[in-house]
Amino acid sequence: MSQPTVEPLPAAQAARPRRQSRAQDTALIGVFAGLIAVLALVPPIPVGNFGVPITLQTLGVALAGLVLGPWRGFAAAGLYVVLGLLGIPILANFSGGLGVLAGPSAGYLLAFPLTALVTGLVARAVVRRKQGRWRAPLLFLAAITGSIVVTHPFGILGMSVNLEISLREAFFLDIVFWPGDVVKSAAAAAAATLVHRAYPAVLARR
Image (cartoon, rainbow, N blue to C red):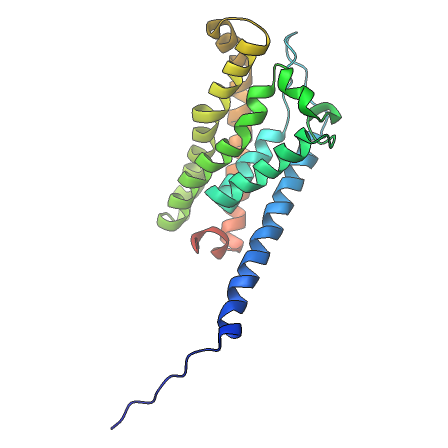
């Protein structure tokens, strides 16, 4: 008995899902870049006298990595940084332009895309392998890993260069941000857990 032949899909039909996927990715990247911008406009909390306030930007960056994964998260955070450096006032304190690179927070800002990348790499592995009660704690671990491995070292280096202080001094200035980052990482992990529960394909399909 002969087997029925399966006709290949026309090229136009085969390309349609890929176009839809790219369009969805582009939309998500834009949405999360906008989310980071909105969170950056929440009034910052001044800390000390060295010019680096506590902001919610890092919450948005963590969410981008946790929800979108490494490359789309990198693109969302990168888009936000590029638009800010081009002069759009979407950075902290309604600032924008290349002049921010001379400020003490330059290292933190430039770290955002790489932070989302590292966070996303860990988050993708978590979402693909872990379900149930361990997902939220492991997503928290992903967020705090990106912060510790990328954000803080870049921030310390930026303060050392632009404030003309030693790395040791910059390190002790940076410590003040650690408790807030733990809280923001926990909030990002909780939100990302809800997103992945509602839309399991948003990251796992990658």
